[in-house]
Length: 325
Image (spheres, rainbow, N blue to C red):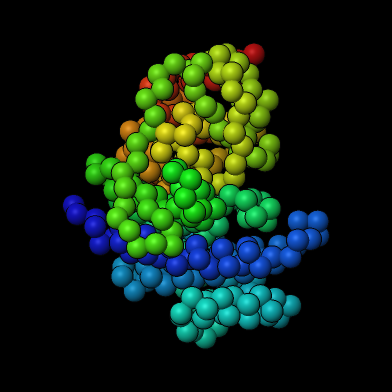
């Protein structure tokens, strides 16, 4: 099938949502992190999901959306100020709507069960990076018969590879390749490709900033077994997928911190297709392909391993050895 129309809707909607998130992030007071004040995240999360689900509802009204947020908390009178701010940000994006319509858009992302065709959305991936005014992403993917067929991954704070201004959107269509384009410019998209580094000792390695998201200690032992000498690059969100896709790193590990933990599909789907279509490989820690047939979680998988594909099996073998220790 031709998914050019879906790709255009996906890219346009994540761009619009990313601009809203960036406005909120830039306006955050310096003491937000100290106060652990989630207000800006709440406003940006809901505003981003509302804008993207609005676009999907208009273009594909029968497509479910498995997203991270729902509007139930906004019904609490104590949270009335959040809704006022969300509505203000949405209007700033050029969209006029009353509060009920905004709630409806947000709740379009409330599906949690598998079907033959659906979208999955993370309106802000990398919450702590967002609060630190560092890396975050807006990720949207279309899945058909359990296969990711379209992805749009916006990384508003990721610099252009040539040193240009920050803000990139990565996109991919199954069997057609991956591309990137500036977030704030109307320019021709450029193909992206993983690196050709074939020796683990020459590889660059990236992982989550937060140790709660990935077992950093085990990652260090995997890195040592592979002979990787470079210090790991730590950044938040699916920006790590983008970094591997465009050849700035060769490995990204998300090792499970608990035996019972299962990854959420919205944390990975967009990035997975971008890397795979750029020539890389993505599996779980056992080397199994990620399965998107189980609703909102990767129930059949443990952890995630991303690479440029040239020594992926060696990474899997090293992980197995580390987990057996």
